[in-house]
Image (cartoon, rainbow, N blue to C red; front, top):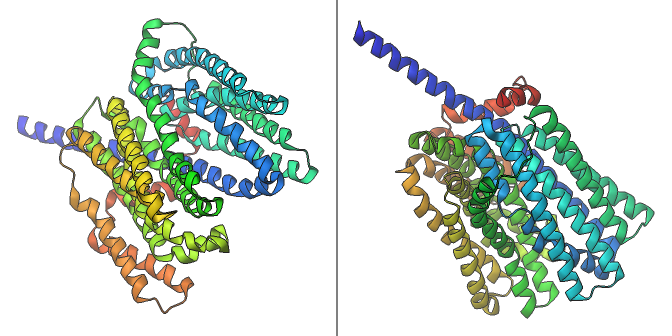
Length: 508
């Protein structure tokens, strides 16, 4: 009898663990889909309003517009310094203290926003801006401060894993962008109104986030606790430096190229680089959705943390590897179709950047793992190493390879960051099941081979044929297992729990 009881208990334990993992898969699928929709909407709106603004404002107006936003954006890191990541992690670990943590973070953010405004205005005085620049700078700085509060509330929604509401907030925000810019262009309202449109969108974002948090989250309890503030700042400053380094990393290639080349050459890199960055913003939905589960698993079980990480890594490889293969094989068709005929030469830069799409997605997941485990200082080391590599490779390669040089620098620096991040995360994970991770690579190579062999067929036939071959190869190699099917079923099941129901269950 005791032996039967032990066997029965072990069986129930395995069933409970399987149910828990299925729940995590389902919740991650819903949250990842919600974040993907938000980021896809942002990418779509960015692609839409960019040509509208450049055509309406002209070179001088658009130059002033971008310079103001770059000026404020450089200083805006003072309004966050990585606090949102720490808030997300700590609420995920101890939700019973979530309202107190959120309230104390909002009070601390108020002081940081005031510091940010003082720094912006002091720098503006030093630059001797004119009256128009002062007006635009004031509007832009106010918008940035409002978005700081809104993004803190959105972070709380992420920590409670109810990211479906973030989609609503983002769609409202981006809808204001589109409608406002269309009205500005149609009615010829001028540059100042363009800035007011983005300010109004920020107010809508803050208002909608506040209402949703007030309804679905525990009430924040603002207070001043110096001990908690010291803890938050001590944990956040490496992330703040990392965010600053990431901003420089995303711009350093264009800046260095523009110092030695004409604007046309810069454009040949900027176009593919923009495609690369938009792709990264879409694939980052998986690490963002997994972060709360990683933070909770980091204090529970190493095996559980490994399972979550491998699931996320497999999902990223299943999507980014075929996408990178598409860029490599069809960049000569895709680049001029998307960017215009004059960007035909830029296809080579996109082909070089294609493998970096995979590396950047893996780095985003490893970055989330490091932060969830409290190793944000090591994450700063990885990002700094990638930035230094990118900078020095640009100095070396731009004179020799022109606009392809920054693309090569991005690829190599992402590889360096992947190596450093893997070295830092392997002690947390142990040995990874390499066979499951190589299956998407083999399936992608099979797809590329099918595309190459069918080179004489029309493009519209080659594309679906390659995707079919990719799916068959995944199935035969065992890349589509029960967990993958469960993940897809949860995303596609139209009868799954609604966002409101999921939100109430997660908060409870």
